Image (cartoon, rainbow, N blue to C red; front, side, top):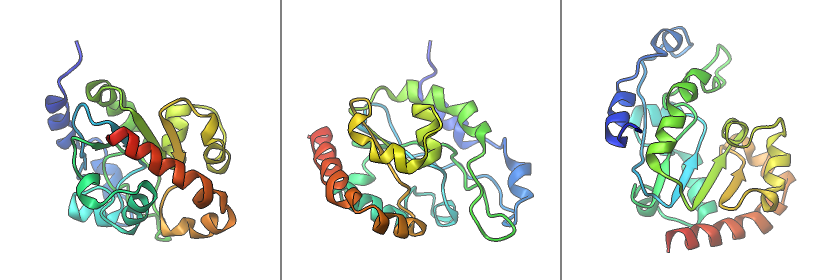
Length: 198
């Protein structure tokens, strides 16, 4: 029998598996798992990992990346943070830290290996799943395709799944290089988000 979501979420919030790993990063921070979800939400956002700002606030996508993602989806903050409508389940629940050059470290694989399958089972099947970034796409879709190829083939994805690039400012050049994303994928995304929320 699957563990109830509330019990699982409480255990996750107390997770300290990566305490030593995070203490050894350039940021030297402690774990702070960030989870915003509840069973039955029609949309699931499978993200990457919280950034430093989200680590401080405890609210996922509480940064310019979140502003961009909400714009792509065509939703405001009230809808985005309504856990009855949208569940946010990153590949790692804590800020992984920065390397010595100030770049984000990748999500530690131990996080998804420990928590992801059980949380997905407890949440139930959403109407629409948004796979944000390469880490989420590889975990959910398998294969070795890069983000550009995976996102470009959104029409070929399984029903109820859309792959998106990460909405970070670092991807602004990618967005300019691939105008089809804003011209074709974003309108389709907004329509499918609206339908899933209806």
